[in-house]
Image (spheres, rainbow over the protein chains, first blue to last red):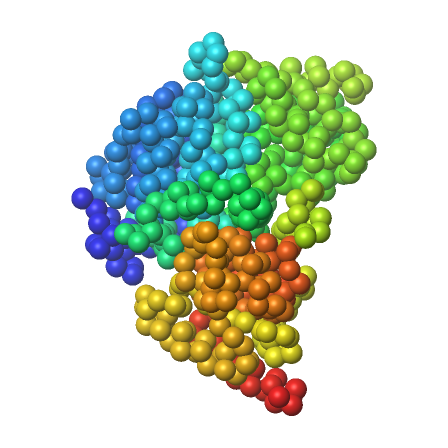
Length: 397
Length: 189
């Protein structure tokens, strides 16, 4: 059993050397491995001095949850248990985090929706826990296939949302997520999303630092709220009288509280900029007629389309959004300057990312924004499909 | 009553919506400007020394003897109030006060404007208040009152305060007291 009291200034409870976040992410030597997204989540959590993890099986994240459990058995994680269901899991995550633990969980699709009430509660209580979301389709009809519609349900929960494109990004992002979420002026939950199956079950080359180094432990006393103790039970303010009152004071508190949670997400920008090396990543021509704005594996497919379009003499650029909340509005405007057409390829029927892009560019861009191609229900997004959409607007020989 | 803020129809001005964020390490914020810590300390001292009913609001982190640092800070804050000629009204916990707060003797983050209105406070320092509660209070005060707010924070600072100084530990408070003494002398007080 690992214990905080086993930790020294130099070593965490499992004997890993404590190093700075910058060293772990940017400076430590790395070696090449060949891993799935689920396996790389285990590797990332192994280096994060995680206090607690709560799990519940649901495809496609079950393997990642299982592997985090192995970390507990190996002595890397303080405590690990299975919840009664996803609502229970997310509530228990809140309990662990309010008690001052660095806490992680994973879920997918219907599990996300079942736990829904907890996510705005997480942000409202300013806990810096991490949810690794391996996106899958949501009911109904019941599906286990890849689709990221579920992310749209999380957009206004007050949680930060980051989106990884591939296995390497998933590794680095899940480590950076704790660092940024735990900054005292941020200190809200973070959801690190990837496309289920496409990333969780795909084996790729990935560069990893040695596993004998790890992040410093979470310091719950550098938090914007007092951690719980016998005088301050969990969610004390949830049970306090202003919740029950209908008067201006009550309204004012709620309004200010909600703005503060959103301000906290905004404050994460400068930290995310450092640890993610930018809120957006761009590839391709500096000035381009065609710009793809995408996140996750859709940006990978867009990059393939870019290679084909380049051969055909079409100037093209891919803008990959790495943070969805906070939304990188200014970065997007800058990166899409001069574009004639902006395509937003995505893996869902509603086009939630298209809506986000249109909202951000409204009144600030002359470009035509096209919410295509859009695939869903488990479909893949062939490059040919992207090129076909582009050909509707741009002459391609 | 509140004016419309920059954040759509909310009556609550929110600094991050104006692109203002907590200051970088080693820096402080005066309204919209990032400045050196000492510049901010001088301005904060001037405001507190020249405003009507200037008040310090100490929070739980300095009101209770959690640690040796808390005890040191509490002693220094008492000295600070004497140098600034400021009153002290504590924020001793964060629970809303019902049926009615005693605005003469306490302040609460959920309705801080009541204490500021009641005591006609024109400048105040938040110190030792957990950041979330300070921020909730500062947004309400910014909207509902004409009080000049100052956040002296042990962590990252508060962009919703009109002046904020970050990473304030006991040695920094001692430095501020010395600066406040100089400013007081310059003002002939």
